[in-house]
Length: 407
Image 1: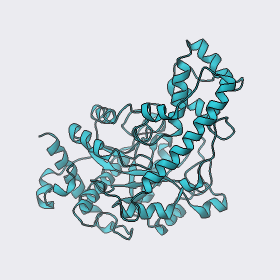
Image 2: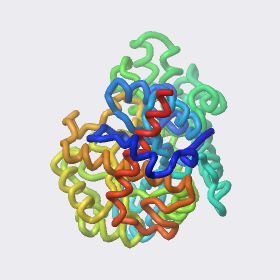
Image 3: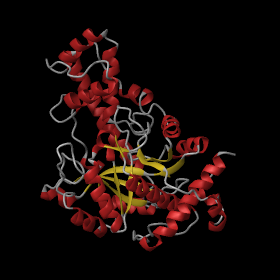
Image 4: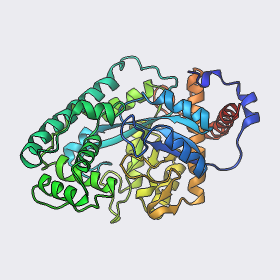
């Protein structure tokens, strides 16, 4: 598997530099964790159809999709960003009861790494970390399946699940709660037509009827998760605290893996509420800088464009790189092209920020592959004064990649 270490020097790359602003999606999940996409090729087909020229894989706790992702990137001429996501803890915020970017669990913190080394080499001291996290997560899901089967034996004996079958048929690497919800929905569909399915769900939910339309798989799976697998549900299993790493350890892993630590900003919910950690953008930036975090990302589809623009402009002024994505981490399929809440087009200044930030990550990947310093040095400090040069280099790296893919 070839990587960026085979690319020519800066001077030669400049002849391939892409001009203008191009659409980017720097955060999608794939079937290697859980995704709306049926396979890893689908997001690339959609990207080409929608004019998206950069895609970033961002699976939970795994990098096993990297090689396949790179292969499809070459096939479709869509530049790949090699990312990862964790669920960690800011322990001080947990003790203080402060919500970070999980709206329900104080201290719980989603955290990404951007532009990790490719081809992948496990960082020294962390050789088994990802495998251990996948194993812990799968053990919890296995316990969920066992507990659900006991509940089903009393309520819907015609429905029984097999963890091994779920792992084999529905998952690629990491088995997650959403895979269980999908398996339940598929098992119920085998019991008959929609009327029969509603009767099964009513018994399964302890007498409460299904609110979703049985013909809407995404809505049904979300309801199954809510009623059966979340706290208070008959299949709920508390998560192993050891599965949540301290954020400082996550950052250390990302740096040693050649990546850029990146905080995913939840921002406003549908009612305009912000978490305690994020409501003051100045304080948020200061807290991140103190952790040596100089990149943030947004999922604009869940945010109001006004709030998004305000935060993006502020973080850019402070020297952060700012990335955007869609996640596609639920059963519901959405466009790959990034939009704000309500399918509002991303404002042109934000499209420019997204493109320039993606170029910096592309340049970082190139630099790291060639043993040089990218946007972040080994100690986690940002080379903010090099933003312009890295943006130009990244546009050339992306152009050269697309040139190669046409051969």
